[in-house]
Length: 453
Image (cartoon, rainbow, N blue to C red; front, side):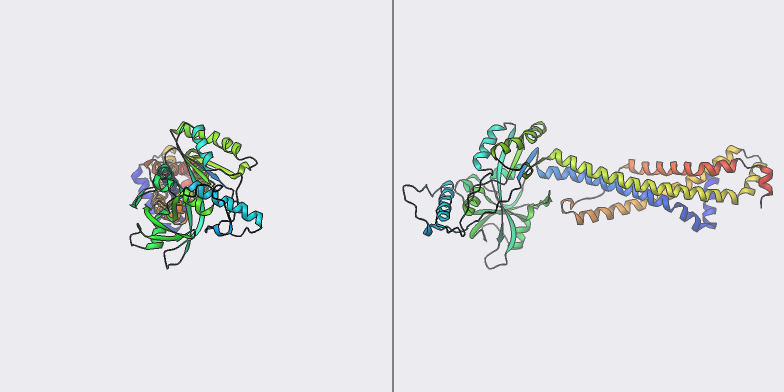
């Protein structure tokens, strides 16, 4: 009883009982393809996560203030409604002075009962002075950069407006997040110091505004004013549900001046190393809340790369357990089906088994024959399942890439160990499902077997 003979017998049986054999290996095909596809897709997700973190920034810690106060913002100076004495008025040639002028106008308007389109002071939020204090408090941070966000309609002159996220930032903020430029330049310190009305467009925002035409040097209308485009960001996609391609970056002092609000919505922190990032992640929230008296701690959100790794790791582990459990259940059902088919095969070959034993076959020979046939049946199903799993993994990854914008480049990754694991599992299923029928066949008495049928 050798493997060539066993393989030939299996192929002959498949020709005569084709439907029965196909149904018996169907569960193995499904289970194996599920194992291959799930492992390849999840491994692709792991590599995508590594690329995602590289794009996000090195040793980056991000703080977000989720408070969205109901503020009344004006885009026009209402100096004609407020009279300020020259000696009492601050220097309006500087960004801080202009913000202070607008605050005093707000106070005067509130006292006169006319608060329409006048900025209202906001309390309990981070300000630029807090950013400077945090830089001194955390020497392990290479950079701590403020961010102020605002939503506004944006349009080219004569064009249709669309909603975009306006971010007041600094030149170093682009360095922390590794934002690359394809056209023009980033913001520079002069833009911040003089509150220049300049902006850097995300790739999609530039395309919406100017199409294939050059954007640098042209103007866009937003926040009640015209802004000159000085740069266009390279396509970066969406990370943590934040679409960089639709982003418009302006100097933070310019945004504060136009809105009349001196506040910071977020902090971008680049730590010196991973240990410093972890320490900042642990201590930052308490430090910020100490400066924002009475604020709900749940409104301050902080995360770093370790948080992302842990979150994605938990998610992928859950999916891995789920898919492997489904595959294991499928293989269990298929193993029971194969055992049933093998018992039927033993019954049909009872007389043939009697002949084998009559010419000298031992119980071990009969046992090994039926075990080998069961294993070969499972290996055949496993081989088909591997090819099907490769196809399913490609399709599943394409579906994920189209459904999840953050994973637009998700592709399956196949390692040789996946195929070895799948084939090893099918061999194990073949042994377990064939052992009982093989024992039944080996214990048949030759004389009784020859009289059967």
